[in-house]
Length: 209
Length: 165
Image 1 (cartoon, chains in turn cyan, red):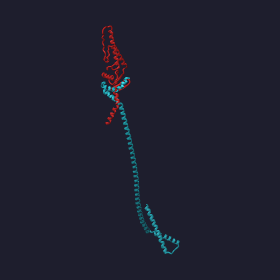
Image 2 (cartoon, rainbow over the protein chains, first blue to last red):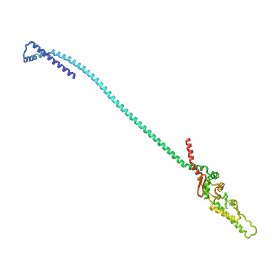
Image 3 (tube, chains in turn brown, red):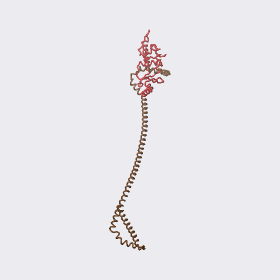
Image 4 (cartoon, rainbow over the protein chains, first blue to last red):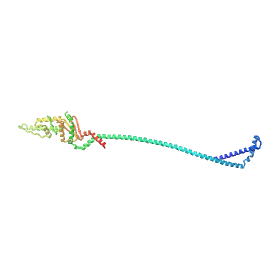
């Protein structure tokens, strides 16, 4: 549509130029043929001549020639414009491609950078969290180990204390059960006399009071 | 007169029984004497049967049973000992047999006090040994106390075994 409009404009311009050119030629011819007249006369004369010859100038052949010239010019202009348009279009497309490529690349690079940064941050956070968790677990393990150790020591001490407290009774029961009546006084007499011998002085002193 | 007590005479109860028996002997001899009142000539008194403890005691102290004076003195001495003699109270874990008891009494009277009397008790919880009470003191020679006092030895041994293990 635009091309058609441009072609019409080009034809109209061409026809106006031809008309101007003919007017100029005619005035030169008349200037040579006739002596110099006043401007008003000349204008009047020219107007009359133009009015008379207008039909002769734009006859059928001339119009056909003009049409052919216009067609050729029109095609030439169209081709030229098409070529320019194509060139511009190609240039624009190329620039657009470059721009899009650059923009997309930049955008992708930015996105990748953001993604990498986010990944690094997430990785750092995860590492920090893991390190913190490991530290806490280690601390808890140490605390648990200490608590268990203390608990075991306390239990061991309590058991040992309980054992010591009851050991005499246990041994007494055991010895009593094991010896029973077999451990008669005859067997014990040497021990008894030995003990009394060891405490003889105290016993004698007490008996004399 | 220092009275010697035979090993068979152990405690105050025995001594009281001995005194009663001596009184019975006296009564018997008095009866015999009463029966022979008015008789002329030499009167032979029959010595009544006595327990071995009394016979031993009389023999040990050289007392003439038929002599009333000596008998009276002997009885007085026995009563004195019964009332005043120091008593050692022995508590055993098992029932003591007579022989062992006599050996113990013999040792006590030889080493501690010649007129000491002994009372015997029974306490199985002692396990062994003796729990001795003198007039003012207590001497615990029982196996129970010995084990209790030596408890640290067992603990040390157990700990040593634990460390070796």
